[in-house]
Length: 393
Ligand SMILES: Cc1ncc(COP(=O)(O)O)c(C=O)c1O
Image 1 (cartoon, rainbow, N blue to C red):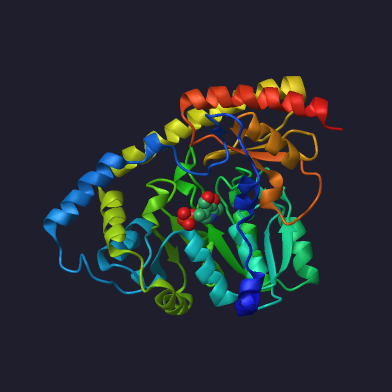
Image 2: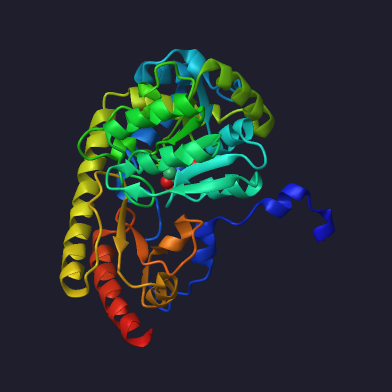
């Protein structure tokens, strides 16, 4: 069969997180999943989604069962234009940020282009690297975001075509880029002529307000492309988001979108558009932030305990779903397998970087499990870590 595949098939690889998750075998009936990067089931606005969906079907608007343009369903684009305060010519609906990043990479990148990303980042960046054989550079992360001096030095010696960045409550590290660094990144993008791909699904889950996006700070909108998704605040199953980009980019993106899937489901666009314009939306977001902040605090307390007993470390995230923890012992991928057997599943740091080594970091998602599972999961992690320490060299 191999001879039937295209050259592109040879370059594409399985999602890094799935590779690690496929290698585990929980030996208990009730594993606790700190690995799943999804919202908590209780935080999904099910009632509102159901109510609005019923309203839509009852009203039976014209075009409900039709395709819309690749750009998006008119009323949805109109709502996004108002909420994002940007003309409609800058907006295109997407099936979420996975698709958004793919379309943007198709538009921008050629084989061998220089591509920067945070040293630890979400695995969709790696698909671009593999597909286009990009010359990837991992930029170290500090507590307030990318090490911009490192990036600037890199730019002095090599050409970069694009920088992929998750500026708010980053996946996996939880880091939020400071305003000062955002401004510096825009300056660098104009000076060295590269595009910033801003992947921002966690902005509405920052516990205490959010800084302006890089896109908002970009004066001409010529060096930043912005991607937002409703996956984390409505439901991943919505498969709905949007891209904001300069109309010159947007026209091209619409052509790629057209040949990919014709359009994002107009039904889902109607649903998302109506929900964010409903008077309940601000309360729904406030409830989610409050809930996830409480979960973050529980994880922080667990970490404090593990810091006292095992020297674990981790910076407190300002929002989002993830706590990034340094367990100060290399080879966490081995421990992941043991911990999964013991009933606590996490993602090892290796899944988020192209660098190879004896990684000491893990990502815990504090959002997905139930309250009971979290408590159980923390004690399983502690027990399992102690066991691993004794048995490994
Ligand atoms: C940074 C980042 N981008 C994109 C995605 C995928 O989002 P979507 O469901 O919008 O495709 C995730 C999901 O975990 C993510 O963390």
